[in-house]
Length: 173
Image (tube, rainbow, N blue to C red; front, side, top):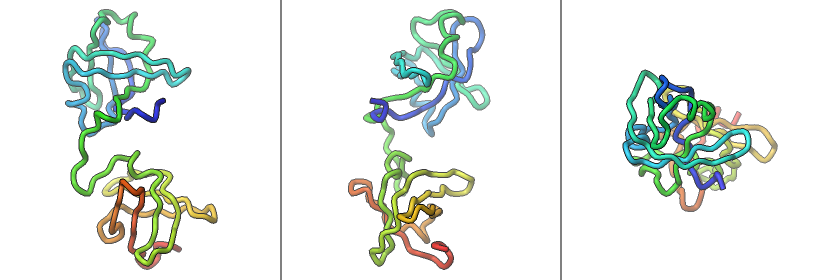
C-alpha cells in the first residue's frame, strides 16, 4: 500500500516540551506539505504502522521544519514518532515543471538509444550535485550511469515509461 504515497519527510526529533516535531523534508515544496490544515501520514519504518495527522502550524528552522500537530500537546505524546516516515497520497503531487520529473516517474523507465537499441531499465537516481544521474541496469548486469542533461536525454515519455538518449562518446564504456 505504501507505493500509493510520496515521501515528503522523516521525523528527525522532538522539539521542546509542547509536542512539536522536527521533520527533515524530502520535498521541494515543504511550505505546501507542512501548511496549516494539511493531512500527513506517518508510517513506522519498523512495522508499517500508520497514523494520519493534521498540521496545526509549521516553521522552518535551519534544515528542518518544526511542526505542531493537532491533538498532540506534549513531548510524551510525540516521542515515539522519531524516525517515522512522513508521506502524502500520490494524488497530492505538485505538478513538476517542464523537463523536471519525480523519481517515482523515472525509476522503472526503459532506456533506448535514438537508434532503438535497448539499453536497460532505470533502477535508481543519484543526486551528486549539478545534475541528477540515472542508474540503468543493463541486461548483462552491469550498470550504466546517464547524466540527466539535455545533450544526452532526448525524450522522456512518462506515460509509456520510456527514455530515449543520445549516446555520446564514452558513455557506454
